[in-house]
Length: 194
Image (tube, rainbow, N blue to C red; front, side, top):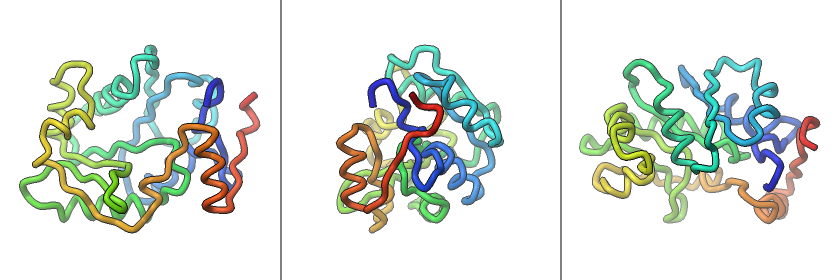
């Protein structure tokens, strides 16, 4: 979105990043790490009242993998599982997160990653075991969760869902316009965004 942080687009007056944090909390996610890169100075004050650990990616131009790795490394102890969510998915709610967690708990025993799949296409967020988290962190720096999954396809379980929320994200102004056409809902920039 150029010089504007897409996570500060608002739906029904709530910034997308806050909507995601509310969804995670509502689904019972215990510990949340938020990785901020570009626009951190605008975003951090908006999430200050949430019980989250904020990590700054000082090299956001290194790409999403660098942010992912910083986020999953920020957890000190072993985890039951790790869920990686995006801040630009306007319709994800606590039910969607709860359904993903339930699918993770019911996954086949020989899998360690759960990815939502809607109409044959991958969605987000994704959830994986702590062993996968550790394996990603021990891999070369260009390897993130997606790259690990591509190298270990048998470890991935696709959670088939009709919930389009898993597929909708906003990367461009055209995505915002398409979202409004598809849903009839308008998005507005947070007051702090120039």
